[in-house]
Length: 530
Image 1: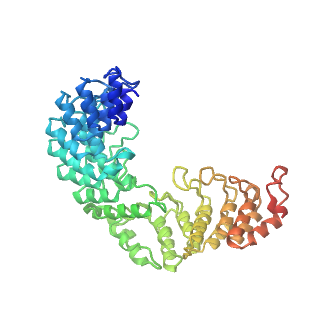
Image 2: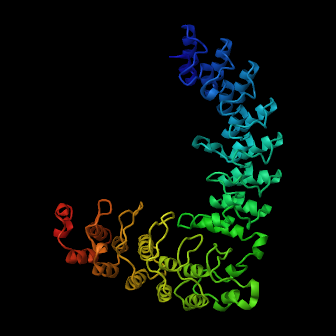
Image 3: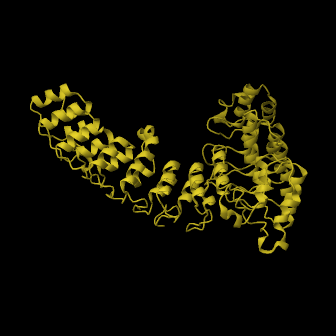
């Protein structure tokens, strides 16, 4: 066994034997690491002692031009550092990327090692080639999977660095301060620590490069849906109406809402709404009367749009900042039930000039799309009468790419029913209403995990016989029962549904209207001939 391998394994006996056999103590591996590098990296006190006794070079440069002391800082205990330091190791030596032992200890979240280094003269002002100090590096929390168990130590390390004089607002080459990095990673405890130490919570990046938008830490916290961090920043006084260079507010940075992030999204909005300047923004107070429920106070809501209020009146098409930054009609369509007051409110907003095809800024959905999502057939009817586009298509840059109101209705119905949630939505009636008003059945989705799916497939999965019939009667591409989604066709989906539910109505219907399969599919379409 080579001395490097023995040292890496922490095998003192094998290392002793290798050196006794004449192996060079400072011989490097292909990456440049010597046995002392490997022993330091593994934290083997006995191997380090032996190598130093054999006059191993404590200043040797290995992988990334790092010394054994630098390697020890990120992975060993102070005992190894003590040995190397006593042998003359430079506490402030840096790698070819400018990383010092202190930086490695900080990045790994090791308070004991960090404290030892600071006590022995480690320089907190050193910067990497990317202009990052140790505080910049620790502020973002663990960057490697193996460091996650130490996550709770990162605030401790940050405090040690601050107490040692680390610059609280040191900027890296992109203009990121430690607070900016902590906010982007959702390190709420470090964010609070930095703010308490005087960090500038309104400092933006430099606004250079593809990812640099002159955004604030609050923008970054919102983009990551880090609600606890948003809370800390808002309580500290971070401005919620500060725009980045694209004129986006922090609330604009929130990702689109979906079933997985809904709770975090709402929590972020909740804390943004707590900021004092929200009292001076459009939408002031309207979210107090626009809440989910069977009915809504129409007159109270309409009062916010009363032109007699002058400049305080809300624009019927302007986003409501405190309510997810959506236009009023989109919000009503999303929150509303089929109750008469919700439909009355939507009708009144349309009469005031609300755009029935306007996108919501956060949900990226039209009013009709939102109503279809909930199976709100009465709202859907109202919007269609107002010329809402039944084939409005969701952007392919967001969740559910390429979905139309019809697909959204059928897809959500399938999910709700499969989960046994029931719900108040009348999904099949909503789908039939959309079909009767020109909703396309020929749309083929192109993005995973829905690649190849058409409205017919969603209708079958939802178990909607009438919707399936309506789509088939339309004919065309959308009625192709042999179109494949992965290895399945509409017919095999219907057969699978029968196995799962015991209901063969859709399968029986499709068999009765299906044309003979193409020759190459005859063997696969056994359900047609069964």
